Image 1 (cartoon, rainbow, N blue to C red):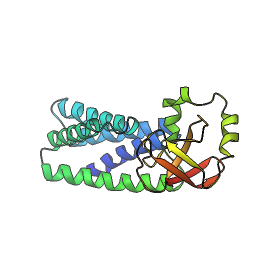
Image 2: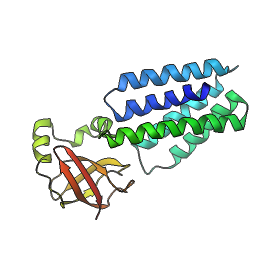
Image 3: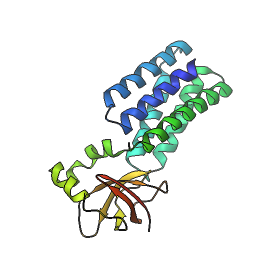
Length: 200
């Protein structure tokens, strides 16, 4: 039961990050994790603080890729928070593993259906994008299969790419998993505003 609540919390975070359902996803995450700590029971705020700090650092790692340390520290804090709450390392790993597996399944499903970090990246990189979404859409229609570009953010598997001398940032999806920033890529498929790329 508790593991399911934790899993629902992680799924809520995934929905908030990958889809336009930010409020619904965030609400699901908050309610599920609050219920998790309520049912498990904790005598102090320390486990909750550690768990929350760990989650924030992991989310930070997602949006500031290649930093590395924040993600590692986040995982350590998250596990520490769960362990201090449960008091049993085996159950901690079991609950966390169960949550990660079901969340991974949801993320894979969302990515296969065209969702990506572009939903939030638009807010982060807004100052580098054209002010008119219509003109951006027109530009995207001009991207052809085989066109070469450069990843301006790491693709995990979604990210931003520029093509040729055009400074416009394009939302793309890597077909080869993680691609590092600065790597040359080639368009494999371009349909409307959905662009998939691979390493050159």
